[in-house]
Image 1 (cartoon, helix red, strand yellow):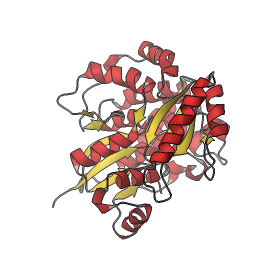
Image 2 (cartoon, rainbow, N blue to C red):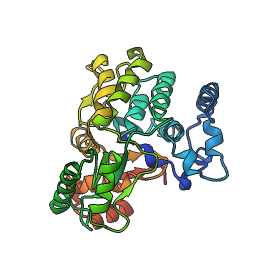
Image 3 (tube, helix red, strand yellow):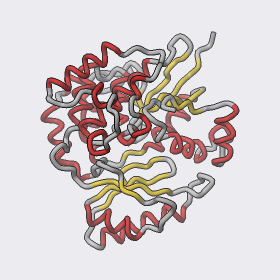
Image 4 (cartoon, rainbow, N blue to C red):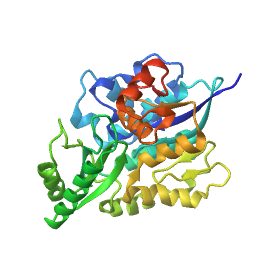
Length: 336
């Protein structure tokens, strides 16, 4: 029997919310008992709340659950549970990609980091700003009501960013996220953007406990990461990976030193192009389905917008995407 070809997409930092509390208690095919015991023990040794404690809390506390040192490893555990639930007898994972911190998850699930190495990278990178968050991020749409890319809205974002810089602010395009632009910067720059971008429903808004990820503002963070995380943690992947530039890292040709430098330097300080990563996954691997790991479904709309931008499977509008998802889903969101 032919196996179904899957492109797996790993979630980013904002995916664990009050709606996903107790995510690890949900019934699923994969068992992660040993994994959870290990990861809880590692965090306990560091004096950090365990993942079990955080996920089993009675109430979601934004000030606790969204902190980088907690959110990153929480999302790792939840997405790992979903990844382990994929039936390898019926499915072939042809490639893995992710958004932002989803790159670290990609490294873990593709085999470029082992169990312990993945924890070290994810927990360390997530804890870099435990004492002080550098800058922040806001999000703003660049598509119309049909989820088609709007050149006018792109121009509005670019023009407003230029004006913010002229006003003394520091702003950068942090992530190309399907139909959204994630903009990072300092308080002056983001304050200008929040005040001057035209209001569209609840946009623009600032992402809670997010730093100026994927910008030059994190050069010191990158340098510190090299001090804490040795190259020996990394190895060639067992499954192809697609990074935030759309580059494919193949199992037999990956330069481990280059992978190490990209992970701790390039993607930390340069724009993360999730749109291109997914586009490359579609065009180079022609999957039967795209599987979005949980928790949550925060990337579902962005992936739909990327399908529309590429006219993939004849999907050219939000209505087309919704109809396809109802009749024969191409995107499988495990976090729903």
